[in-house]
Length: 122
Image (cartoon, rainbow, N blue to C red; front, side, top):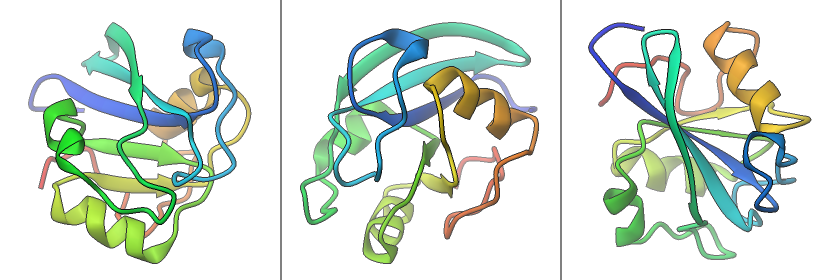
Protein backbone atom coordinates (compact mmCIF):
# COMPACT_ATOMS: atom_id res chain seq x y z
CA UNK A 1 0.00 0.00 0.00
CA UNK A 2 1.60 3.17 -1.15
CA UNK A 3 0.38 6.71 -1.59
CA UNK A 4 -0.83 7.45 1.95
CA UNK A 5 -3.96 6.54 3.83
CA UNK A 6 -6.59 4.28 2.25
CA UNK A 7 -10.20 4.10 3.44
CA UNK A 8 -11.62 0.58 3.23
CA UNK A 9 -15.28 -0.10 3.99
CA UNK A 10 -16.65 -3.50 4.94
CA UNK A 11 -20.38 -4.14 4.48
CA UNK A 12 -21.59 -5.33 7.92
CA UNK A 13 -24.83 -6.05 9.77
CA UNK A 14 -24.34 -4.47 13.19
CA UNK A 15 -22.30 -2.09 15.33
CA UNK A 16 -19.68 -4.31 17.00
CA UNK A 17 -16.66 -2.59 15.48
CA UNK A 18 -14.09 -4.89 13.92
CA UNK A 19 -15.97 -7.92 15.27
CA UNK A 20 -19.11 -7.14 13.18
CA UNK A 21 -20.17 -10.01 10.96
CA UNK A 22 -19.99 -9.33 7.22
CA UNK A 23 -23.40 -8.77 5.67
CA UNK A 24 -24.75 -11.30 3.18
CA UNK A 25 -24.56 -8.65 0.43
CA UNK A 26 -23.54 -5.06 -0.16
CA UNK A 27 -27.15 -4.11 -0.81
CA UNK A 28 -28.57 -5.53 2.44
CA UNK A 29 -25.85 -4.31 4.81
CA UNK A 30 -27.03 -2.23 7.75
CA UNK A 31 -23.86 -0.17 7.74
CA UNK A 32 -20.29 0.13 6.53
CA UNK A 33 -17.40 -0.30 8.92
CA UNK A 34 -14.70 2.04 7.61
CA UNK A 35 -11.06 1.42 8.45
CA UNK A 36 -8.47 4.01 7.55
CA UNK A 37 -5.17 2.29 6.83
CA UNK A 38 -1.94 4.25 6.86
CA UNK A 39 0.63 1.82 5.54
CA UNK A 40 0.24 -1.37 7.58
CA UNK A 41 -1.40 0.44 10.52
CA UNK A 42 -5.10 0.94 11.15
CA UNK A 43 -5.24 4.68 11.86
CA UNK A 44 -8.94 4.72 12.73
CA UNK A 45 -12.23 2.83 12.55
CA UNK A 46 -15.73 4.28 12.23
CA UNK A 47 -19.17 3.13 11.13
CA UNK A 48 -21.75 4.79 8.90
CA UNK A 49 -25.20 3.76 7.68
CA UNK A 50 -25.03 1.84 4.41
CA UNK A 51 -25.30 4.43 1.61
CA UNK A 52 -26.93 1.93 -0.79
CA UNK A 53 -30.64 1.41 -1.30
CA UNK A 54 -32.07 -2.10 -1.40
CA UNK A 55 -31.75 -1.92 -5.18
CA UNK A 56 -28.05 -1.02 -4.92
CA UNK A 57 -28.50 2.60 -5.94
CA UNK A 58 -25.57 4.71 -4.83
CA UNK A 59 -26.31 8.12 -3.39
CA UNK A 60 -24.33 11.23 -2.47
CA UNK A 61 -23.49 9.71 0.91
CA UNK A 62 -20.92 7.49 -0.83
CA UNK A 63 -18.96 10.56 -1.91
CA UNK A 64 -19.14 12.01 1.60
CA UNK A 65 -17.62 8.82 3.09
CA UNK A 66 -14.49 9.14 0.88
CA UNK A 67 -14.12 5.36 0.69
CA UNK A 68 -11.54 3.87 -1.71
CA UNK A 69 -12.61 0.20 -1.50
CA UNK A 70 -15.74 -1.70 -0.44
CA UNK A 71 -15.14 -5.25 0.79
CA UNK A 72 -18.30 -7.35 0.85
CA UNK A 73 -19.61 -10.90 0.61
CA UNK A 74 -21.46 -10.31 -2.68
CA UNK A 75 -22.65 -7.36 -4.74
CA UNK A 76 -24.87 -7.08 -7.78
CA UNK A 77 -23.17 -6.06 -11.04
CA UNK A 78 -25.21 -2.85 -11.13
CA UNK A 79 -24.03 -1.97 -7.63
CA UNK A 80 -20.40 -2.57 -8.62
CA UNK A 81 -20.83 -0.38 -11.69
CA UNK A 82 -22.49 2.41 -9.68
CA UNK A 83 -19.81 2.31 -6.98
CA UNK A 84 -17.02 2.41 -9.57
CA UNK A 85 -18.67 5.52 -11.02
CA UNK A 86 -18.15 7.07 -7.58
CA UNK A 87 -14.49 6.00 -7.47
CA UNK A 88 -15.04 3.02 -5.14
CA UNK A 89 -13.52 -0.34 -6.02
CA UNK A 90 -15.48 -3.44 -5.01
CA UNK A 91 -13.93 -6.64 -3.69
CA UNK A 92 -16.22 -9.60 -3.05
CA UNK A 93 -15.76 -12.88 -1.20
CA UNK A 94 -15.60 -11.57 2.38
CA UNK A 95 -16.80 -13.79 5.23
CA UNK A 96 -16.60 -13.89 8.98
CA UNK A 97 -15.87 -10.67 10.86
CA UNK A 98 -14.95 -7.26 9.49
CA UNK A 99 -11.48 -7.77 11.01
CA UNK A 100 -11.04 -11.02 9.04
CA UNK A 101 -12.31 -9.39 5.81
CA UNK A 102 -9.87 -6.49 6.19
CA UNK A 103 -6.97 -8.82 6.92
CA UNK A 104 -7.80 -11.03 3.95
CA UNK A 105 -8.09 -7.99 1.69
CA UNK A 106 -4.79 -6.40 2.65
CA UNK A 107 -2.95 -9.72 2.39
CA UNK A 108 -4.45 -10.43 -1.04
CA UNK A 109 -6.42 -13.50 0.09
CA UNK A 110 -9.77 -12.20 -1.20
CA UNK A 111 -10.69 -12.70 -4.82
CA UNK A 112 -11.30 -9.52 -6.74
CA UNK A 113 -14.87 -8.60 -7.56
CA UNK A 114 -15.95 -6.49 -10.51
CA UNK A 115 -14.06 -3.50 -9.16
CA UNK A 116 -10.68 -5.15 -8.76
CA UNK A 117 -8.52 -5.34 -5.67
CA UNK A 118 -6.05 -2.54 -6.31
CA UNK A 119 -5.59 0.00 -3.55
CA UNK A 120 -5.01 2.84 -6.01
CA UNK A 121 -7.87 5.36 -6.00
CA UNK A 122 -9.56 5.77 -9.40
